[in-house]
Image 1: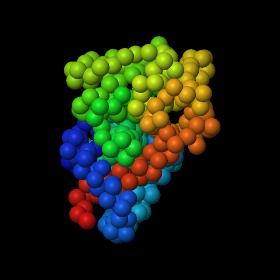
Image 2: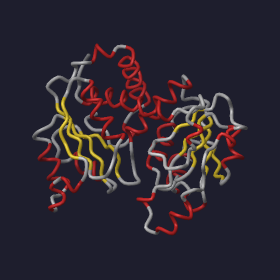
Image 3: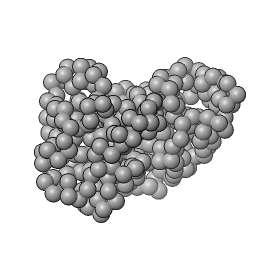
Image 4: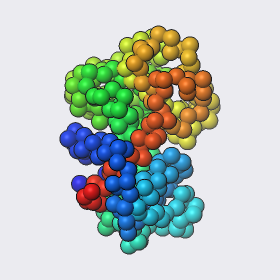
Amino acid sequence: MKNLIDIMQLSTDELQQLIDRALDIIANPAKYADSCHGKKLATLFFEPSTRTRLSFEAAMYELGGNVIGFSSANSSSAAKGESVADTVRTVGCYADIIAMRHPKEGAPLVATRTAGVPVINAGDGGHNHPTQTLADLLTIYREKGTFENLTVGLCGDLKFGRTVHSLISAMSRYKGLKVVLISPEELRVPQYIISDVLEPNNIPYVEVTSLEDAMPELDILYMTRVQRERFFNEADYMRLKDSYILTPDKLRTAKQSLSILHPLPRVNEISVTVDDDPRACYFKQVLNGKYMRMALILKLLEVNV
């Protein structure tokens, strides 16, 4: 594999290899400290990001490599009208690997055709976010020890939430998965997730509007924010933005073994009073993302440690 554009490019065996490598990085950080010495990562972020960009940068630095790049389209030649293909072809002359975020679906795939170096999709519009899914999977694995026989609730913006689409696709290959889709009518999961992923894999699923009703059966609760930047209509955003707010009171009926995930940033969909609950895993998720990105960089650069 030369690029990572979609999480489904990775087989379950390859996912486990990345997880095992990440766990080894956690256990033996010194072993990896110079593994990418002399290598450069370019971060091409045409869309705002805090965690993903800094996570990639931290990952490369902790592997002993260097980072170049930009954090907004306005600070790149895209502001002058340069095409994505030309930008990445140019950057490929300077870097050994590229992490790219873009508001247009499919832009990272286009980049792979001209880059000349491995390209990692760091999020393309409402479409895909495979490295966030890697962070999610490592978090679930570290909390549960397995991906099998889990009931996963996904709550909030399931229509535009690229992290939701990627996670459902990745988890669809494991035995015993049950999916609870919790959203307002207007933000239901796209039909292709049901017709192309859930139904062909015979995965039991329900679509509900009540988080409280779903809570008692969940092993994983994946909260998402209602994303202002995906709405064309401010009035629709304002009407839906507070649809689900997770509070300690709403967790009263939850399992003690529940794991609460969120791709972040949050706005107000998880009360800060939940942060100290031992079931809250979203800041662990942030750290797990760095380790999985380290493992992925090593894989794509074919570095043996």
